[in-house]
Length: 153
Image (cartoon, rainbow, N blue to C red):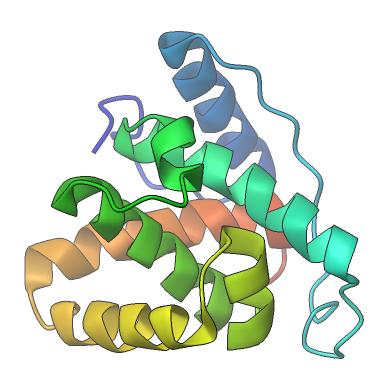
């Protein structure tokens, strides 16, 4: 996990500051486009919007976990550590953003069955306290960044 995120993130502004710091560290720019709470739960994410949201989310995954975004976006098989970060992203997109597995699959350029496998795998891995703490911190960052303040996460 990045040393930039040594504290707890409570607000959207803290999340944005952390993202900017990570982006600078990795030589990337960050464009944040918030998803309104419940936007995808109502089934209103268009195909284009799903891809936009997942693309921005992949940038955050890459910066947070220190992996190349190009490898996360690749349709080819990849190293286990890259696949694990992508699986975390698919899990969070489904559970936190409320995207359907089909929407997540479209946004990550994968099959729905791959998303289902990722969600089951990450859920099982949450039994490990250290992994769960890392994932919970990433979920807080994602919620503050994409869903805004007041979500209660």
